[in-house]
Image (cartoon, rainbow, N blue to C red; front, side):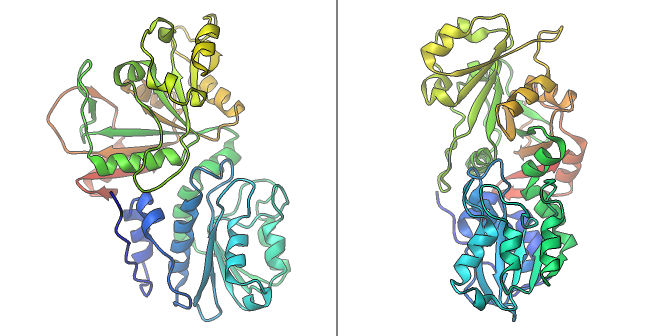
Length: 403
């Protein structure tokens, strides 16, 4: 499989840009959109669209930092450069865009800088972007969102204003920039792990056959997008039933986009793995990327030593399940910024019931008319589906919401 280059009409204005971003799968945006030729005239909307697209190049490599993209336009609106934050500890998007534009900062005189998130005011792993921009001849800075980090939180914008820069925002791009930085924003605002669900089902909610019957609900294109989704999260989670029935790999296997595989987390509330004789894939393939959550009181020491997996002991409630608040807090304390729940039905239901889910990625296939295991389709997602919303993936669709 390969993606055909996306032919972007850079002369367009109005809602074209938001529509293009909303209706194009993110893996295609990352792999198949190329920046325009130098000097191509761009509107504010076109520049912010490009900033959102280039930001995707950092997926899987920048956590706990946010995905951020930046674009520079000349005083006449001509395209100069773009940049993204590509790796934790490396230069931020604004720095990369400026360095690509010119070694001589004098060439930036009168330029406009578009960035999806407020330039940072503080020095951490890297110097302050706001102070760096303030020292250039860039005339205008257009940002997507204010950074909620208390070390920034408007201070970057103040630095720019005090340096005489014209500082503006584009209200119609706020939701898109919010989605792009959803994990970081949640981490900063709530000091907890961002938790999402990935579900593939029919419109009526069927996710699998009864018993051990496995169904391919969606096609290959949707499954490829599902692998890119794994790149956007630090950890994936499945319940013990899903692990034993499906023996999944839970790694990132996209045919076009490369990137790291996330941590794989398995909830085993009744220590069933201690009685399992098979060498499951999560135990034998990169076991250092596997974390088994087991009930305190069970001895997982020999098991962990045999396979080289990581373990985490948690208490159970009166019904024999782990408490979602404790699961999330423990993963947060391990340094994880985000979690993607991948199944099965019981895990979906318990997480939603506990209000432990912050976003849902729903891959919708055809209505098969078959019965089987289901998940409680959220009304807002179903309404969006009935209205024709979502990202087309050949015969399937992807619908996504923040809760």
